[in-house]
Length: 248
Image (cartoon, rainbow, N blue to C red; front, side):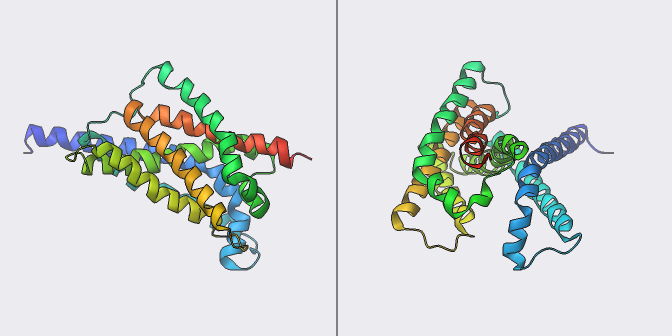
């Protein structure tokens, strides 16, 4: 017969897996509009051909399954890392730690435009929705799964690994911000055929690094909801750009 303490740990593990699947599913559902909208041009870039009948749906479903799998793994890792690092990311920090962060994210929109969005709009307009329903869904589609992946998963992992070092949390924020700034640079520019100028690359990296830096600081100080509010505010650029540049 299984000892009681092992039985409790087993039940707790099953509960964490269940909760992890729910969180990963919600993150995938939030990301679905972005994946669906960008599937046609991503497919063309990867396959160098137009999709045949049914291929685009298969490509979309395959990306959803990939997103769900990746999020499930990183959420389970993040759950362990947050507990080991002494973080309680989903504890409500209070309205004063959330709503002002939404405003700070909105204030970040003009900065991101002048740093890099002004040339991405011309070089890669496909990443910005030209339909209102997608433009309204994109802030949540971009911010929620990204915060799960970058902050809840990787930042908590490195906060735990660097916990024993002096200023370990600060080192974790800087390291994760730098890594994902490079990833964002690659992800934003991998389909651009025109070579970017050195100043454009520099401004893009500075902009995304600053955004990750602020979101990371908010996550470790106030938790998930504050960093999500900041990112959601920053991603409100999508409906703003729709009304400024894409509305007929």
